[in-house]
Image (cartoon, rainbow, N blue to C red; front, side, top):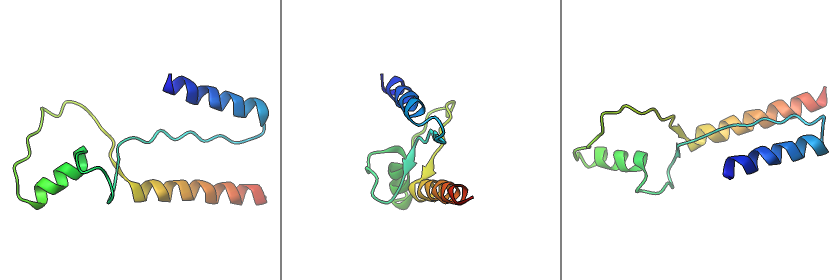
Length: 88
């Protein structure tokens, strides 16, 4: 339902604003200074700082982790490009 609602929102925007540029960014696994301490990255950092053992799985899955400041830079760059394009 969540993905379907996001797709429907894009359809609504396209219908109402056919000349609008839509950029969809699928960002997962952000972490940062004020993150929940129980999440994976903050928990790993805490264990490293305390010199504690870290138990891991076989690591047969893939995750893309990105710091929240990098996400902010990314969104700012999108806005900068959008503003530049709207002036031309």
